[in-house]
Length: 317
Image (spheres, rainbow, N blue to C red):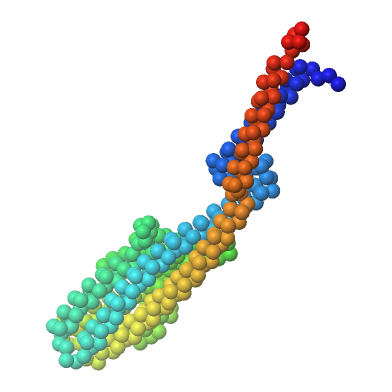
């Protein structure tokens, strides 16, 4: 069987191109450290890598959400701590002022301190997170939620509760709206349970300030009515403290759940990384050995092609 010179030439070029392609592919694998550089290298493996990377991306987003949640909840916890400590001080002052050994002047001084605590509680309720969003505004977290107008605090937020995804099947609230936390207290108004018109923590403290100031400026106020008002206010402060402490307990439970899920997500990310490595990472020893073989193959093809180029019948005449 005769082989034409053109055919031999073409076969030589094809052989060199094939060897060169294999060599370049191996060199690319070594430079990237990946066995699968393009989907055609391993279609099934490439599809699996795509799915693993998507799962990794989602889980990393869950971890970012968890970091945001933890920060927001910790800031809220600190704000509520400040309010609880302030209310406890207000309660102490209320008990002191309710003592008959205190005169009108002393109660007026206490009223001034109560006014400062009122401002402090309002400031705590308007706490923002690291992004400048108001913690207790609900969905309306860009506007100041609590506005003091002439001693009456108005709530400008809503009753929404922001949720963040921390796993494929789980969401956790990143905060509490101000209405449920501070404005919806079932206290006592002049001896009646205020079911139809819920009280606010701000109204309770402001009423205390007014009662103390009125007693100081009105010597005719009866001791009995004053003590009745003070006892009722103490009861309302206890209601406010109980509601806020309940909110703190809920925050603690959410933080525990978030931290638990964070550990689960971290373990899952480790598993994903291991599976990704097993699927797509290159075996360097095997690749280097293959590279050497391919270099030898390319050199052999080049040498063979050089000899084919020199073949001609005229060389034998």
